Length: 84
Image (cartoon, rainbow, N blue to C red; front, side, top):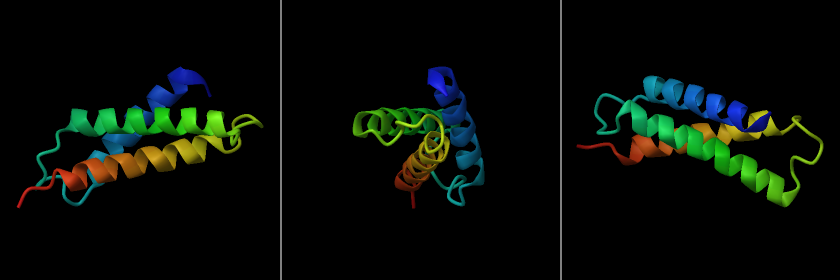
């Protein structure tokens, strides 16, 4: 996938996750925070997968794992910045 693919994946997941999160309107999280969380989540997942050897066969597990971790990071960021 490469690093440009990770960045594009993180941006797409960040914006989509922010837009679809139910607490988006009541949260102080802005779109750029979710975007940053998505990119960082995907990058951390790729680095962790490479270090542990999970992605040794190429792109088979890389896309779904990076997508899931990026989505979790975006959901946690928007949820934790929820204001009452």
